[in-house]
Image (tube, rainbow, N blue to C red; front, side, top):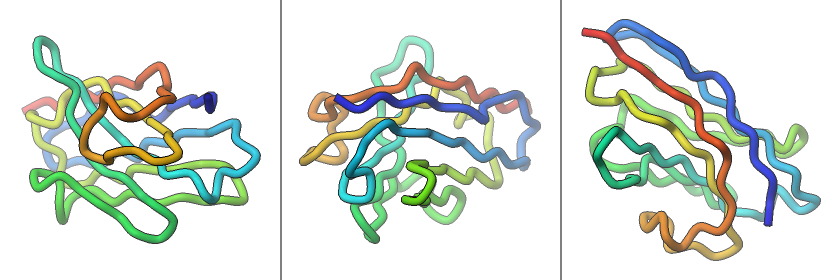
Length: 121
């Protein structure tokens, strides 16, 4: 398993921005698919974005607002979140896996502890 530590969450007004970071302890970080998921209270964990080498994937509700990227030299994956909405409020998790079904959280093996994002209206 890969050890993951997220940071960057917080409280922001609607329309604002946040950047989440996730540092991974992996010797072969550059080849590992990385993802972001979120979970709101009482709801199932849902896919947000993933990056597999240079290819990115997003759930429809964040397309055009969120950007996932990675810095392999720093073993870090980012989630830049712009034009935030109250419905984006959730605990955001970073995930890693060798060969995930990217939109299914149950197929990702390694998880961070989560970072809270709260968007006020």
